[in-house]
Length: 143
Image (cartoon, rainbow, N blue to C red; front, side, top):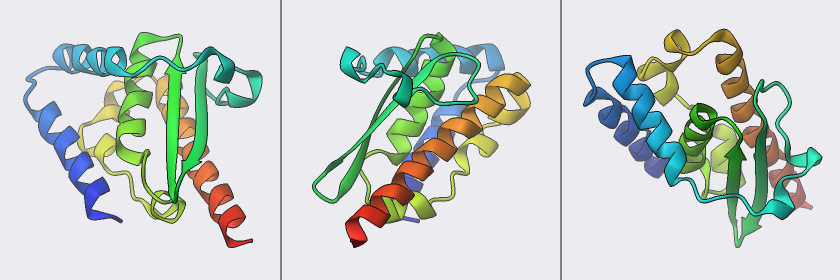
């Protein structure tokens, strides 16, 4: 795992440790969602919707040089915050790095214990889709 990804995850964990209760943590997640740049309407397509999410979540992946970039959006404010954390951690790295990354920050901040089962499943679907894109771009780059 790249040290940069590890640092971003540690930063998120530290940010969450500043809050005493989950109500405050949810507010922080919502704030992160508000900071996520809006996704260009042209990418809000059926192909970009992540399957397995209760809310609608769009994920657009593209290469810039040798780095894989993600843009995302959701129609649910909490989910928008969750996907913004994943974008913050994974976007802007090589597909190889993203594919190999161990995303431990969600467990460390206690997301799985505090999210409804459907949200937790949706979060897992988002991670899976981002890693699938990384694997696909890795394969394309090897051709």
